[in-house]
Image 1 (cartoon, rainbow, N blue to C red):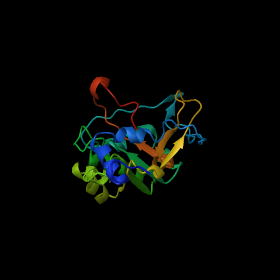
Image 2 (image 1 turned 60 degrees about the horizontal axis):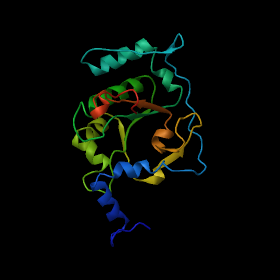
Image 3 (image 1 turned 45 degrees about the horizontal axis):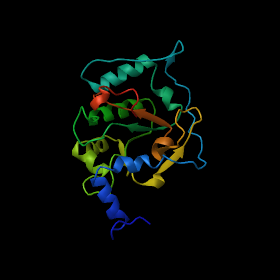
Length: 217
């Protein structure tokens, strides 16, 4: 049992979160694990490849739905992803409850959802787990509401899964012998089991890193 000077587990975790230790706790889900864990999920071949190289499309403009449609046409249609399943999980960037360009805009989520559904997807879900109900006002749903995303995407037909990143049972530990790290990695079940995962990161500066984007999910 987790105790701290008479506080129960919830109170103790609240203190840790308020002290900024949430990231350390989450990292502990997968670090130091030497137990037997399954290999990571195998990934189907990239359907958007030409001449042996992954395709990259850059679209300029202000009409997001039209831009997404144009990108899909150049790639040969997003129905290539539909062959993997009828549901898609959309992973935006909501590390802080601040508006774009810190977080992914609601209209971007909606535009991606619409183009996927036009190509045969039956369901799209926005997933986020940057928050915990253990701290009042810091739940994932509260963060999404603060930036005007939660209600807007739901109004446009996108489901929302606002998870708690401190719910250990919601994560799966996986490992890959090809990875340069030895420890298991904790992956949320919604991400691990998604037939199609669409990553929508934001290219921006992060302190001394200067530039991020390629390694985001």
